[in-house]
Length: 481
Ligand SMILES: C[S@@+](CC[C@H](N)C(=O)[O-])C[C@H]1O[C@@H](n2cnc3c(N)ncnc32)[C@H](O)[C@@H]1O
Image (tube, rainbow, N blue to C red):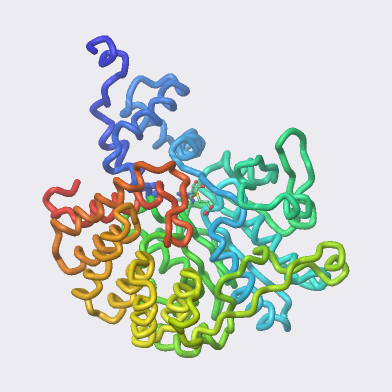
């Protein structure tokens, strides 16, 4: 034991200051309580630079000439870049069915589309957008000026992104047929994005925190669509709000924003218009009061459950070759629930979700009760009932519903999670923290990339991170570091 302890050098005296500089510069509050992890990464840079300790290293970072280069290397070391094509199918469905068609119609006069993928990692997100835009516009793409910019703080991710070459893991959500259409084979298990998609995207280094200190370049403005997904999860909740506000200010009039699964934050809805789409929430620039101007879910007539490919059906010439199955008819949220004609559990659930998405929570509550009369042991229905009751500001009943869903399925991580959030909001800190810890414990027993049930694409790792952030925020201030 003693030999092992001496083999791993202890964190040195200058480390706390170095850590706070790193968090200040990158926003990575994630490392606040992860000294060992950050130290391990810093030590790699100490070894690479031949410097003996954190103080000397901080001097290097502060150096006017060598500092910026070393910051780049350190940022590369400490950032986490998990990404893949068409991540979060629900958001790409919303882009395909609602957001991009709305933009294309509204901008048909100027034929100019500006899109920003902020925190793009190795590029799967902006290239997915390029593929989608290309598929939707078809041949008329030639008459449009489409610019998609992917930005990141990590230089090596950006270099990889520019190469546009991906392995199996980044393409894991894409059927082989789609892969052939969008990529060229580039050797063993490697695929290169085809030039027609690649040419729509460019990459630039950009630190999101520069939006807060006024150093962010002014050309990062006037965007029709901004995606900033799975980046803010590493930041302090206060920083998250400031960045989302700054991103909103970089949107064009009536521009759209999609965020990742950082917890649904009421502050976002207060600063932007909010549109509930199936399985996700989208934001638009404009005051909250204007929300009523946004078409409702029903007006948009979106499909509820769409087993058809995520991408639009190919252009007519190609359609004959590909034989895409027709889309299933939209399930009417108003269709009556009939115990005499039992529906699949998913169909019942979809009806409830659709009603909730329409914003009519009273009707969603009534529908959910009817559905529960048919399927009283459906844990997911109880879970959604909890969410609906919460929206109706009936916390006691919501708590009861979450407890029922947990009773029916003890390993239902999202039910524990939402119960925890509800209890914390009710200032019941002890039980709230316990419920969140249960959610994290369940997620910890799963592989990091496992998609959780009823979690809109959230992975086990992401849930654990969210729980950590909530627990940190719920900690009495004197115990917070
Ligand atoms: C988990 S990846 C998400 C990639 C992509 N948005 C997605 O959802 O698939 C997070 C990315 O955010 C980047 N990032 C972290 N802090 C950043 C900052 N302060 N400014 C810009 N990018 C940052 C990381 O380098 C990393 O590539």
